[in-house]
Picture: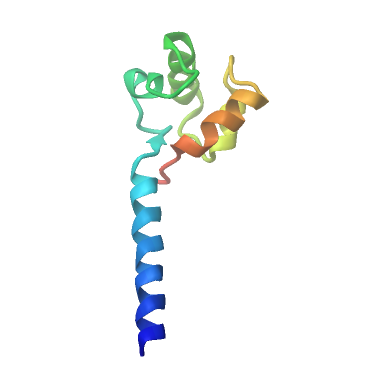
Length: 89
């Protein structure tokens, strides 16, 4: 019985932590320039380039699509990807 309780506690901890972590991510499809600039390595020109790309091409389908934005190279994408998400609505 104690073993089941322990596993239930551990599982609930990981589920609540992952949900809280997901809530902290910035959505590329809804973020404002100011929100994007809160990311380390994203200044006003990069934030504006992301929004211009989104306006011209529609919603991002994946975070990796960010590589198509001028000023976002592989290294910057790798650094940013953990802090970003894309909504599918």
